[in-house]
Image (cartoon, rainbow, N blue to C red):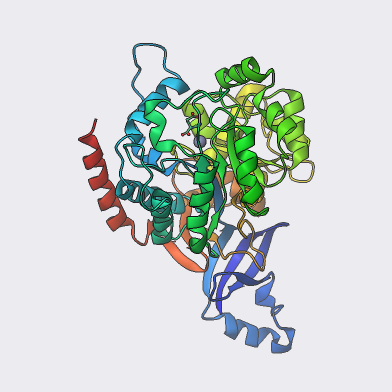
Length: 469
Ligand code: NGQ
Ligand code: ZN
């Protein structure tokens, strides 16, 4: 049995003091006991015996549940900095997408693994302990299936295992280039899957499922997959598995949907599929009030990716009204212009402040503290979207723990209810000091345990990819 003692730990009901967290050999939490220094663990032992029994336990000042990154295309990490030069026409999401397609053309399974390992080590260093991979580069550059149908998905899972991050792999259903079954473009051939392909990949990944690894599915978007295909996949996929989809990210997408069916994307999804808690709607940026209410009522997660949405010029999600109706949200880093959970949460709130010209918007009646509300809210939605036992320091869930750097000046002189406010809103130093996933330390003193070898392989990969440009 392994243990960690935190002077302050964020529990589901808020901060608690003197918390003893215990976990078993499988990495699952077995007990969480507040007030542990006062011999509350086992009163029969008495205070003195209790202090002795805690003497050899690792002690930390501030412990939080690790964050869930609910939306990732890990290969896009290697595009960082390369798409920020203006082209001839006005640049947009759609011109960025052309560059991204060009980049995706030549990457090999080895590259995919190397890039993912770099990304995951960075995500861990910034407080993410789980990640959902929306995985669509599934064929070889010539458009053929690899001999192992799940080849590239297996590479991403290998990177997750190397780094220690918890993984929800979502093989993508991707058949068309636009509403009305428009054929794929040549540059999308590597992404091509139909319902049977996706089910074959899911089946191939079955032996890799474990406490750290889950497998769901992701229809890419209503542009790329039909309702019939989605139904075909969901008819076979076990009910508990998560389903993610990109939706209503751009105005042009909403317009194309209206032109094709007379329905907006979210409206179409609601009318044609059983949108419920297993669903995670990525972006959901351009919604009517009815659509906002519909998602909130359904219990589906709104998967928000504020730094990518800003980078691509998407727009702002109707967060305030969604939260007022009890909507569930989580955060993702999507294209990975940022690998920091703090930056996603900060921009989630800042977008709303800029839009409404007010302050302290992401709160509820019960939780008036923005940092606490955002971290706890994103844990809840992230865990739901990941379909894994994560998101809180509670028995039965994974021992995924982030320890903050209490020696950093940003942590000086804070009341407990100001700690997450400082984490989310103060400065740019990384306050994540140590990170544990499933009971194993993977980040110590801000360094990932395999960081150097992973970065060397990433550097080599980028040098190889340069040659193709
Ligand atoms: C993706 N990314 O699949 O990588 C998409 C762009 C598309 C974002 N939506 C491609 N952020 O939606 O067609
Ligand atoms: Zn995406």
